[in-house]
Image 1: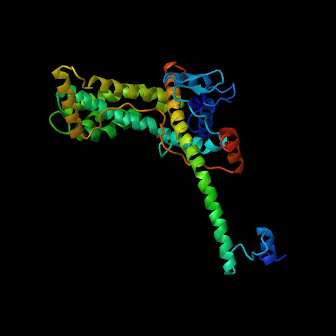
Image 2 (image 1 turned 30 degrees about the vertical axis):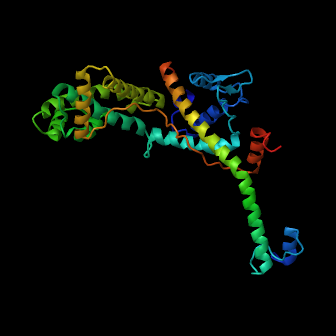
Image 3 (image 1 turned 180 degrees about the horizontal axis):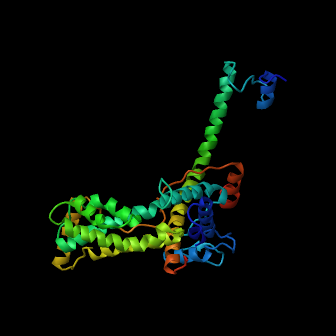
Length: 84
Length: 270
């Protein structure tokens, strides 16, 4: 099957009205689909952003805690005279 | 302490070290993790205690740590920071050399203020020579002359003698670290002495309410002289880098994300 045939693209998108998902042909219908997909992605990202932000902040907090503990650990080991 | 004993050249050991610490904060941490007791003792000093569920609780509940896949990037970033901090950009004992350099400069400046009431403006010129001397450059009659020549001025002889005394003391103290196959742990012990000295210095010259006038004047005179001589005032430092409190970039894949939602946020999606 040719790589960029309309049949393949129809199959990929699952939409019989769609002729292309790449936009390579320059057809109006193509840009509509692309725009739709983009909006869908943006919508997903918008929903996901609070979780991502929460996760980023959480890792930031734990990174600080781990860094502080690492120093605490080294100092406590040195105080105990461990390295020998 | 195996991470330190194994020397910083084993970068993967640092990654394991930080991964283990991250895990030790988690309730699902393995019992073989060497940091379980340490993390509990560390958090206890902030009033956060581990409860029977192995989670940490205080007035404000400590959030559950992120799963391994998502914090992996942060641990790797910490490994890179630790290696760079200890070895410097050129590798080797960058951290110790840098700290020795600062220490020599500060000790010689401090001694001059105490003995002469001033600091020779060319003090920082001789510190490079002192460092070479401390690192093992052979000592002969020209060593002191070199210091004397680099310093110049009426007090050059006295400061050169002072530099020789400080240099000799450090040379013998550092001999084992710089010339033999010693571990990074030994170097850290020595660096900690520098930090302790800086802390003691700061405490000695810390101005507090109720201090007698002479002590306060001494502090101000010190700061003025040190600034004029271009020498930084001693400050205690951390042996390993401490990260800033800021959001970290999360790199994730589908499976990592799935683990995040099912493990960390089980109720959020229901």
